[in-house]
Amino acid sequence: MMLIDTHAHLNFNAFKNDLDEVVRRSLAENVWVINVGTKYQTSKRAVEIAEKYEGNFAAIGLHPIYSTSGLVKIKTDPEEGDFEAKGEDFTKEKYQELALSAGSGQARSKKVVAIGEIGLDYYYKPKTKRKLELFKEKQKEVFLEQLDLAKELNLPVIFHCRMAHDDLLEILRNIQNVQGVIHCFTGNWEQAKEYLEMGFFLGFNGIIYKLDLKEVIEKTPLEKILIETDCPYLVPPQAGAKRNEPIFVKYIAQEIAKIKNLDFQKVAEVTTQNAKNLFKI
Image (tube, helix red, strand yellow):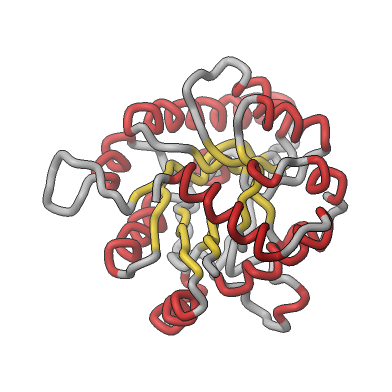
């Protein structure tokens, strides 16, 4: 039985010492992985991993916290990688180059399957009203630039949204011809319903053990659900580990099966097909 971890970060420092072993474990359990970029450095690393290993794919993009880090202090994460205190400007050309097959100069790599993770994140935010306005404007500006890139490359989007669902929905209401998934969904059913009506998938991971998302999972059609780990973060309690990794995505499938009163195999089959359809893998 196959599973696809649609949001992992094997491209982070947390896996720099045992990447081969983690990938080997994943493939041994028939788990494919999409490694997701958060800035240019981690996007580039995701592409390198995808090109090296079977069953691994890449998403490239600039996470919203890096587009506005000059306006707010954020906690650095050694698990991720080197941190640029001044943040990072989004340069479309650099990401376009990452999406191209090595040496082709023209054709898009089949291993680059999405733009992400991109979106809005209001968790760390400035305290003054003026800075907060600039902060939100900048995130939205960079987000829209990356949506344009997704359209140009004909790629789906992996959306990051934290404490910003109303603003994200407002933007997406005016966007046409974009497919994608709301990664690590944390909103309410009304928000979920609107995303679903727009045609987007919802991604669930270990956050379902911390937040009450039972109603959302119950009401969301299985055909619109993707499973993910967000490793190395959000370890499912059943894993009994300090660091999350792709093989633990099975626990998310099991929990969804339990909540929806479905067979685990059914959840595995449908979510795998969903991922293949969205990301064309």
